[in-house]
Amino acid sequence: MRRWLVVAIVAGLADTTMLLAQAYAPRPTGFISDRAELLDATAEAEIEKLLDQLERDTTAELMVATVPSLNGVSASEYANQLFAHWQTGKKGLDNGVLVVVAPAEREMFIEVGYGLEGILPDGLAGEVVRDAFLPRFKENNYRQGIREGADRLAAIVRAGHVLTPEERKRFESAGAINPWYLLPLFALFTGGGAFAVGVGIGSRTFGAMAWGLIFGGSAVVMAALILSVLLTALVPFSLAMAWWGAVLARRPGWLAQLRGTAKAGTTNWILGEGTSTTGGRRGGSSAESAGRSSRRMGGGRSGGGGAGGSW
Image (tube, rainbow, N blue to C red):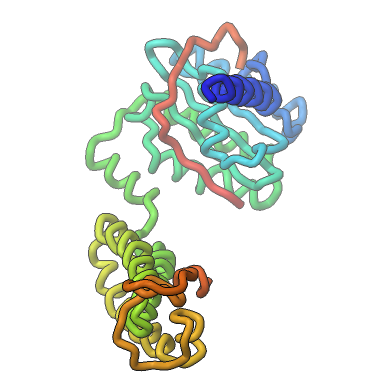
């Protein structure tokens, strides 16, 4: 058993290494790696000159990578892995910034090194994405979008202004997701869980009720942690879904599926279809039935922060 486990791990590592070699290009000879061929020679030379001068003046490394495909991962994950693969930034300073643009998936992401997080926090990076990159990308003008975005990022890094707590709060709040946007998602989970609880109560089946409590309860806990005021909308909705589930579960067709009998009024609770707590035929639960150049790579590390967008 251990031998097979070791073989599986080695094979998995080999596959991963091969995939990384295919997915991530070798370290580029400059600050631009245009594998998606979005830039003409003139534009690439202009941006390369801008970023080279930034590195000479500040030692910070700002790199741009355009890729033909994200290979099935998100832009943020791709950028994080590519940042680590290229080691963008100087060792000990961690002053690297990597911009990944994937035109095929119409996604992009800015990955920021540890040393620049105070200068370029997530919210400010998100502002650059929204204001400088995406407007041009939406027009399919990648050349101008990359140029304007690189200009904006270079100016921020060159200024070297470490944001005050008030400024960070303003930028982070601007880039944060409004919790109310998550209400439909939470409603789906809590409503589905409450409906299952109602079905369990109406049909007196433990399986449906337990599944609903776990499914819906976890969503309620998450909603309370993110923004407790969400519960003011979720609680009445969940109660209504539970009532509806209880009403439907008393119908003969539902009872036949859930309890194995179409007769209402039974008092004993069962685990699922035709399975009594005191013995009997076992069946499924109600939930189941209801269905840059290498010389410049100094070993920089990413803080895992950044911002992205799609168009």
